[in-house]
Image 1 (cartoon, one colour):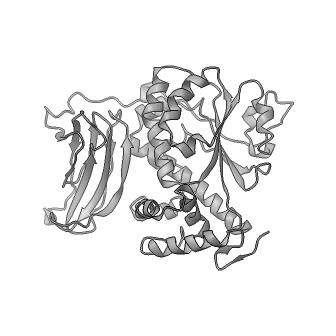
Image 2 (tube, helix red, strand yellow):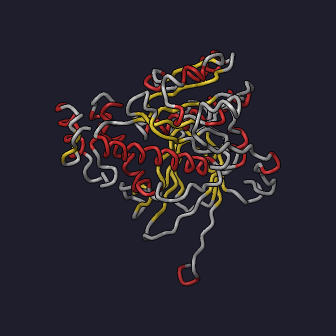
Image 3 (tube, helix red, strand yellow):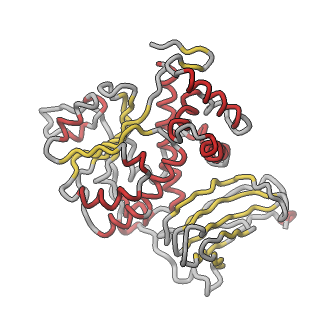
Length: 386
């Protein structure tokens, strides 16, 4: 076991230690004690090839998100009870052992009802559910790094058993699932060592030809595909049986895989979100904001919920007055959100500061489409405050 002195692992070389020290100084105002470890900073250096001009603004954005009302440093302290979670079960098990310094997470990719999830829950609900799991993975890694002095990462196994090829799958690959992948790449840099696709169906080459161009180069290089014939044998060359799910066993008598994981529930089609025809711009229920291609805009109001007709980015900020250039992040800016939204995004915020709360929208990625945002505002003011 390596000796750890003053939060510095002797397994990190001198050049990396110098870069970690430099990066820590550049982001010291934003860095929280919880996140301030050598290995957390090293991941950002590795993910961006020690390019400080690229790293610093991205890391500061992530650190601002950690301090926002997302409260990322403590989110894993709470229970895993987001309504999305029973439809998208956790797959975090234990160390792979056969792959050193790697912790296994198994996602039931083929069985998870992603289409149902996207039509039952808003995108921000889904995102918060995934962030909880990502922060749980990060915490497990940080604990192992503190214990061993070695950098750890996640072996992300994607079980494709039961995957069906249809137009819905293509839509999700190009939309919501792509956006989640981008979010992980931007905010959880080098958290995942490899994506291991097991029990890949015959049409995987067609799926991969669609998904591959949408993924960052570094993510593409991490993908390992195991076909339907020998995947059970092949995965045992990468991870110990106790890290792999028991539902992979082909019979009760021959128990090779030992990790007990809950199976995800399918979404009841009668529970999907249904829009109310009375909730429209024409009826006065919604107001509408149009954002021209390549532009951004904002609404200085407290918004109860909103929906869009295309891809977009948004964030929620506080400013002291309309002329201020200092935007304090309340709800992190999320880029590459797929649209149109199936379920309106909603949320609430308790105003603790006097000033303007600003909901920001961007259509800067679009060349031609005018983004239409329909939003509704509700303010719960005491009579003394009105």
